[in-house]
Figure 1 (cartoon, helix red, strand yellow):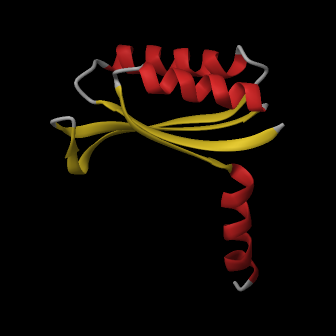
Figure 2: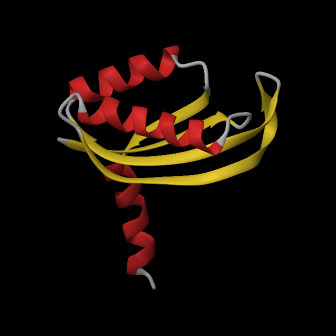
Figure 3: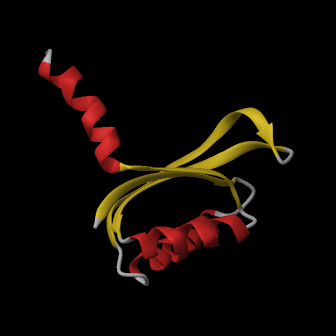
Length: 107
């Protein structure tokens, strides 16, 4: 299984309960397809640099998870049809860690 980092921006015009429910739903998408959640961090509501779908604020959520290609395919498919997700970006955690290591080695 590969490890992934996924940052998404949710619509901020939801209550905290709705956001937490949506985060739990997203986690269930991952665990329901042989994936494993490593961590989930809700960064909270922040101003967007440019409006997205007439929204000027968004709730940032970071997921770190492990999964199979099936997990990632299902995850991507569900993100595309969820209207409360404004933007998302998913990268392999290996690519993130490999970029951090040289900087840490020089310190």
